[in-house]
Length: 142
Image (cartoon, rainbow, N blue to C red; front, side, top):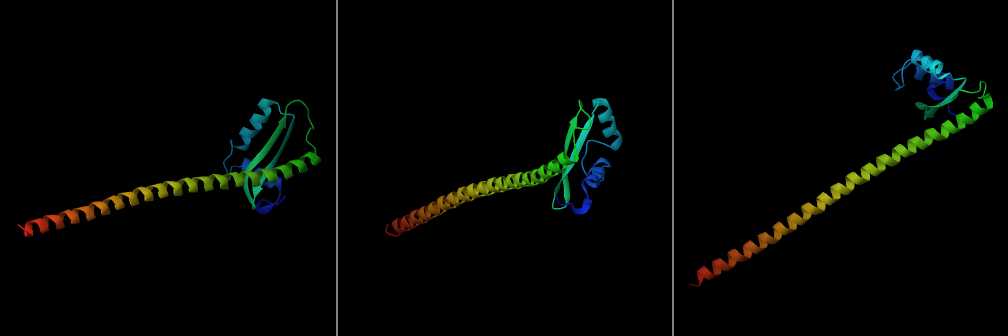
């Protein structure tokens, strides 16, 4: 797992709990209140880090058994968190690509509509020039 600017997973989690510019569900006190009110007996979380930036947290809890989450399970969760961070970034990039595609398709439709209007205007201009020429010729030969 890439540690990046947070050094280790606990530093990233601590940063999120301290609400240092990262969207969270509240302060550390609120987190502790949640744990107490839900009677969590085992908690494990791992940061989602993409290119050294914290993008989220994977949070697991068990309210029935204490000691459920071992160091080995934390290592597995860290691998999953790394893959989840990449997957979330890929989903965001895919959404951006689709949005850009839709924007370009709309611009292309607008361009085709405008080109059609210009073509019709050019045809009307040619027709009006022809009519003007015929009127001129008819008036000259009277």
